[in-house]
Amino acid sequence: MIVSLPRHLLALLFGLLLSLPGAAQRLPLRLLLTTDVHMQLLDHDYTLDRASPQFGLARTASLIEQARAEVPNHLLFDNGDLLQGSPLGDWLAHQGNWPPEQLHPAYRVLRALQVDAANLGNHEFDFGLPFLRRALQGVPFPVLSANLLDSHSGKPAFKPAVMLERRWRDEQGRVHRLRVGVIGLAPPRSVALLREQLLGRLRTQDAVTSARHWVRQLRRQGADLVLLLAHTGLEPAGQAARPLDDNVALALAALPGVDALLLGHAHGLFPSPAYAQHPGVDVERGRIGKVPAVMAGRWGDHLGLIDLLLERRHGRWQVRESRSTLRPVWDAQQQRARAEPAAWLAPLIQQEHEATRAWVQQPVAQSRVPLHTHFAQVLDSAALQLLNEAQLAQLDRELKGSRWEALPRLSAASPFKTTSLHGQAADIPVGPLALKHAVDLYPYQNRFKALRVTGAQLRDWLEMVAGQFRTIDPDGPAEQELLDPDYPSYNFDVIDGVRYAFDLTQRPRYTSYGQRRPDGGQRVALLEYQGQPVRTEQEFVVATNSYRAEGGGRFAALQGAEVVAEGRADSRQVLLDHMRQLGTVSTEPDHNWWIQPVPGIRLVFRGLPEAARHLEQAAGVQTLGQPEAGLQRFSLGGR
Picture (cartoon, rainbow, N blue to C red):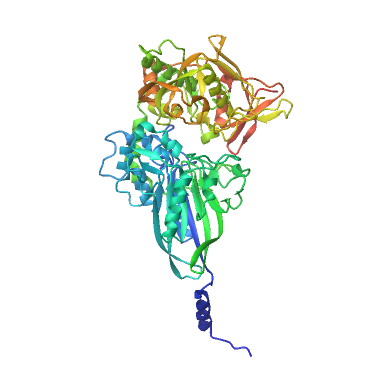
């Protein structure tokens, strides 16, 4: 006999069944991530003094509002490298520009976005530890870092982790109290490079070691979920993480008790095809191993999302399903904006924004030549020539009267803004030069330094630099890709004062991590000083910056190299001083380095379409076809 029950009794019975031990309860949760904003709070390019549709936290804010409306249960995180990276950040770092009673504008914006927790990246320390401590005063949400320790006590120097307690509704509308543990992790090697800024007050701990400890702690405290807010990227494919490495996402994903990874530092996009060759990585669903993960680019150009479906069985919440996605503010294929700036954000920092615009317009000099980095990774460039001449002038002053004065002097400079790294390039026309142009050429807070190296070290230095290029097969296709997308342009040092050439038919000697390849060749086919081959034991003094001198880029040749000069000015100030002294800049590249042609092979690379304006000064470079997805294909050599 079939007994029919009234609808309200059926609903009551169904509810009772769900509440029984072992019955599943399902709750959707969305994690939102911004990372590596680098003070691009507005969609404004200060070097061009105009709005840009391609980046800016103001545009990401619109995506955040939309994503929150779609899923009521959500958490928003910022993953660090927030306080430095644009002229706005530099202006605020000058004494007196930021009243002590006010919250730092970056954290003012995050407060308005109702961020649940934030992390510290390495660039938070660029202006010194006192500046950071002051910036953190009054921040109304937790700012974390578990693996930065006080040098004296050995205890965490900042709040290592937080337990967020939230009340969320499940799919049936019932309210549950969940405890979400969040651990902040900084890139230990990059922070350790900032020796002058930290002055021995902090020391770094391996991120994986710290994470393992704090995951256990949070689990013991009853965390339903544990999230790693980690300023770290993925290890290179096929390379295991080493102690104190910066990029350790694969190792973090292998730790027991981790429910999701929120990544950054590498300015990469995960999930994306760029990581399809990494073992154990699922770029379709956005997982590293079994752990959902997301990394949201830089400058607010993407919002990262991890959608979790939590299921409660036997009194415990677990991740039943997950999917990680990215939402861009700019559609590169269609060349159109995907998000408009949130109207409420700009008024929060309008005063600081306008002051920065005025500051970067300060006149410095005049230029008779265009200064750009469009082709700086494939040809000698006037922009890098100017940087190197500025450093050499500073080196002359630093070495005068010292025991190193008689040694040959060289200088190494890199293209910081390139299409391959940022999707942008420095492009300064003939005419007035302002402070903003120096920022364009030198965006980082490095300091001037000089190293004493031997000829053997110099050759190995250039072998590491040559890792930027792919290996060219002389018997292969007529068109072959030239640049390795995994090699950052800020590690492509152009060394002036010597002549050298690269043979790209040889395999690179080093990985991008500075490890010697067992099958590596010799790409430096020629290396001369004043018309003579550089001898192994010959000594040089090379002007560079604090990043390279203190181990940045993992250049094996420079380990243990002696620092013989340390300027008090930062590297950008060295450039500014040189430009002011010149008055009129007429620097031309001296073409002291080149890529040896491979007969019959076109070496293909991508750049911005506007780079074509400079083809007359770019010998051997040609355009191929029409621009696609906002980029132009170029070739070097071949027919």
